[in-house]
Structure formats: structure tokens, C-alpha cells
Length: 258
Image (cartoon, rainbow, N blue to C red; front, top):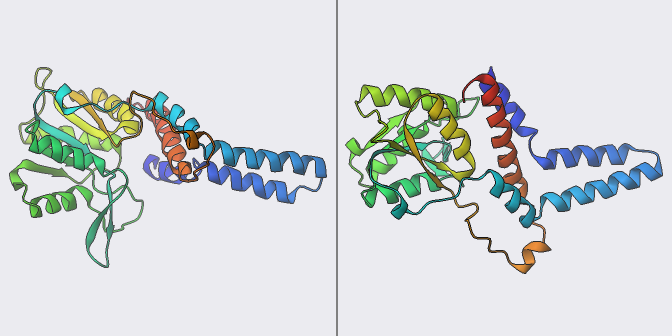
């Protein structure tokens, strides 16, 4: 039930939904003075949530900064959290999304000898069956690209971050690769997601170090003049992801996952 409710609730975290509701309320308002105030509020919210500087600074407060490969030691296994792809049944192909930097950086680490094995955890995060079995399908793709099959481990039972940790723990113990305090695993996920993911893995007593990916913010601020003026409505997605992580962290805390 928690899994289904979380997916439904995600829709209402998009600021564009709030603005559309406000716009409809404004349109239905008969009193001219109130309608003008709500109209200006609607325009103001559109501008606020489409400004790159604002979302960048808010994002920075929650995001875990990226690391260089030179900053980390070598690991036996890198744990890559799913949420990187969708599946097209008609063509029977896996299509990556904006979180695919997780597997990209994992491959960089693998080829740089920073990790010996890649463990991909997660089957499908959809409520309905859309043909996605991400970990297994991603493994199949990587093997097709020439990565030795024995170096790619997949876990397809989990559907969210909490289940990722539960199933990963079982799998690592089964294959006798469970990390220790002296030889941790490397947790690879988006910087925005890392705070919640690390807390979950800590709760499950899986010793991991963090390797945040997926760009986002660097430690150095590097803004351009146009970013202070020109709106970009793509940031509604970024705001939704940020709210998802904050609310998700609180919900996981309440549920006892962290």
C-alpha cells in the first residue's frame, strides 16, 4: 500500500499542478479584486519555479556533491540503484532516462578498476506491468556490450529504495560479497537521491561509501547572466524531483526505513 500511495502522491508534488489548480480557481473567481491578486500570484509562481538560480540554490541544499574517481579507493562491488530506464514492449528495447548517469559512471569506475563488480538493484518502479525488469535487462545490455557476465550482478525483486537495500543485503550475503567496515561497497546513485539512499543502507547495516552522480550542482557556483532572467519550464521536473526526495525522506523516517 505504501508503494502505491507514494506513486500517486508523486503526481501532486509537481508545482505545475498547483499552478494549474490556482489558475482554474482564478478563472472561476467572480470578484475582480481577488481575481487580479490570484492572477498575479499565478504568474509569480510560474516565474519563480522556472528560474534556474532559485532551483539551483534549493537543489544545492539537498544534493550530495559529486566526487572525483581519484578521491575514492578501490571496491569489490559498486551498487547501482535502478530508476535509469524504461522499456518499450513494441521494440523490446531498454531506453535510458535522465538518471542513466548512474550506470555510465559505474562503467567508468569499472573500467578504471575502481570497482571489480557492478551490482544493479531494482526491477520496476511502476504500479502496472510495463515490461520493465530493469536490473536484468540492463545486465543483458552490458553483457552484450562485452562486460563479462560474472562481473554484473542483478537483483530484480525490489521496487523502491527501501526494497533495494533489503534485497541487496540478501543477495550480497548469498554470493558472499557482503561488505565490512574495512572493505565497504560503493553506493552509486543520483546526488539528489543519495541522502535518502545512504540513510536506508545505513539502517540495513550495509557498510557503504557514497559516489553521487547525475550532475546537478558542483561545489563551485558558475552562473551566467541569462540564468537570472530567462525562465525555463523544464525546471518543473527538477522541483518535482527535489520535493519527492524531501517528502520521501520524511516518509521513510516515519515508516522506520531510516
